[in-house]
Image 1 (tube, each protein chain N blue to C red):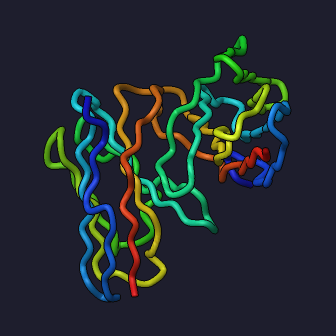
Image 2: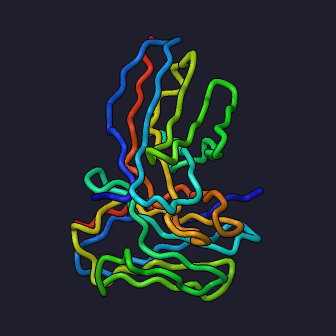
Length: 113
Length: 111
């Protein structure tokens, strides 16, 4: 069975550019999560969706970040404009239902120069 | 105060040793608890859920202490392949499905 699929695996871009990260959750999972991981701050929840609806976006650092989930099989996390401090590994995860374990994608390693 | 706190380590132990990690959580209403394992430059992977009565999976034992608000992970007869970062995760709200993760404890098993 396919796990959570993220793309791209790596992204290097210059500050000011728009960055779009993509995620396909596990089929049948109705909750989707976006995380950011850095050495300094560890794994931080940015936003999560339940049945394609954003439930909690309190972790989104600022207005430059936005996330969408147009359907049950696809989500995007967008940063516009990007800044060097956005450099991190961004993970997408999905779970079947409330309080069930989350399954993570391979992550996108983002470097903003 | 962070919702979930872990000793970052590193823990360096010889092969065959027993090692234990603790993770404390601040909200007494926390409902679900998990241990994840993360290898270098990889994604976190679920190691085991933590049940109220404690649970065991091979060499791994997880415990929950609600009175003191911590969970623990015990690894017996540690292997070189156990070297990784171990993250605890806690759901803070009843019915919520957003996990809060600790920053992880780094374990290195030495030959």
